[in-house]
Image 1: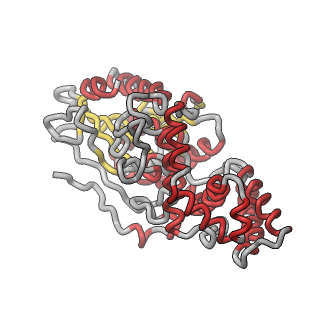
Image 2: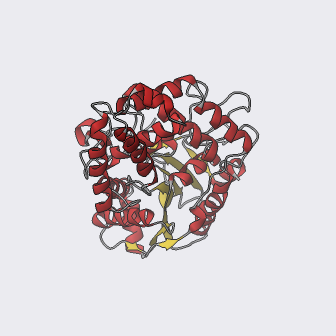
Image 3: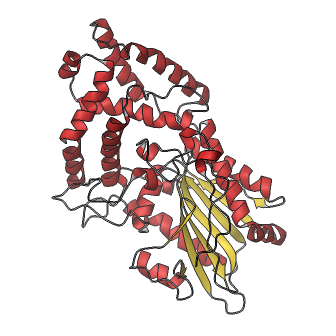
Length: 418
C-alpha cells in the first residue's frame, strides 16, 4: 500500500495559472510547459528497516526566455512585410507591440536565462526534496557527507543549480553543499536519423497541422497574404513557440500571445513540436537507438555514483542540472512511463498511437530521481525512482524487489538498463 509521506494538495490553489499544468497538458505548451511549484509531493515509504542513504537525479533547467531572438526576428519580418502591404488583421496590428513588450522582458532577464518562475521551480524542488528526505539530509549534514551539483556550461543550468541549492540550504542548516562542477557530457545533440527526419516531415504535412498553422497565421494576416507565404507551418510554429514559452514568463511580462494561438490550434502545433522531439530526443524509430543513446554516459554515471556510495563514499547526493535535450533521451533510455514505445517506420508518431508527450518527458524543470535505501542489518540496497517528483515503476523488463514493487535491487536495474 502506498503510504504518502506528504499530501499533494490542489495545485490550482497553490500556484498561478501559468504554473498549474504540473499534471496536465491543458494549454498544449508541449516541452515548454512550466513545472509548477506545489507545496508538497509524494514519496514511497521504504520496506521495514531500510533507510535512505543516497539521492541522485538529472533534470532540465527551469522556465526561461528564448535562447536567442531568431524566431522573433523571423516572425517580425513576416509581420513587417504584411504591414507594408496593408495585410494585417485587427488582432495582427497588436502583434508588433506584444512582441516588443515580450522582447523587453527577455532583454531584462537575458536571452536563454531563467525567468522568475524558472528560479522558483528549482527552489521549490530543493525545498520539497529537503522536506521529503529531511532525516537523511540532516544526518548527511551531521556526518559531514557532501552534496554535489553538476551543470552544463550553459548559464541557465547553473542558475537552476543555484536555485536548488538555495531551497536545500534554507531547510537543512549545515548541509555541505559543494561548488557546482561542469559536465558537458550532458549536452546532447539532435539524434534523428533519416527515417526519423522523414517521419517529422510527414507530420508537418498533415492536414490538421497545416490547417492549424493557417488558422494561427490568419489571426494576424489576411487570407490572401497567408496563401502567398512559403512554409506556413514553420512560420506558425515560430508564433506558437512564443506562446508556449510565455507561459513560464508570466511573472516577468503580461504578454501571452494567446490571442494569436487558439487552444485548438495549439493542440496540433504542440503535437508537431512533440513529433520533432520524439524523433530527435525521444524513443524514435523502432529498431534505432540514435535518438536516445547519447544519454548512456549519464546512466553509466548514475550507477557509478551509486556504487561509490555503496562502497562507503562520502557523497550523499548528486544533482545534475541539464536540458530538455538531456531529460528526454534519458527518460527513453531508462524506460520511464510514456517513454517506452518507439514508432514503426511506416506509421509516424501520433497522439493516438503513442503515449509519449513532451510536457512529461521534456517539461521545464522536469526531472528523474533515484533514491537508494540500505538495510543496515543485512546490507541490502534497494532503489526507488520518481519521475517529476511522482513515484513510478519501470516496465516489465525490470524486475522489482519482492519487498515492494516500487523498489529495485541494484543488480536488477543493471540487468535491465545497462
